[in-house]
Length: 79
Image (tube, rainbow, N blue to C red):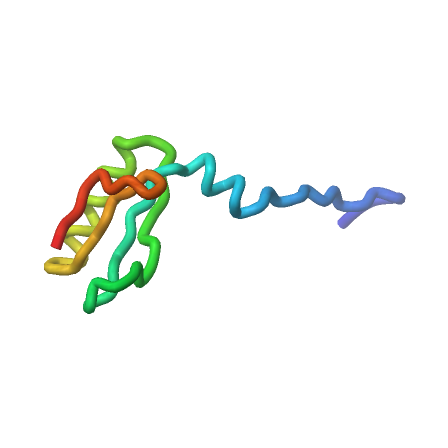
């Protein structure tokens, strides 16, 4: 596959912390007792995309608590 002395180039991956900083909006699905987030459904760089993810999560998980956050600030909540 590689001819001669060519070696594949290694591209370092950025840390997850840096990726989260570039995607400040988070949509979280909370557990049924509503004590803690069960999982992060999505992250977004823009509020428009974050609201679309939030709307899709609401229709997918009827009656569950879903939060749209930016950092510690809650922007929208359902359930």
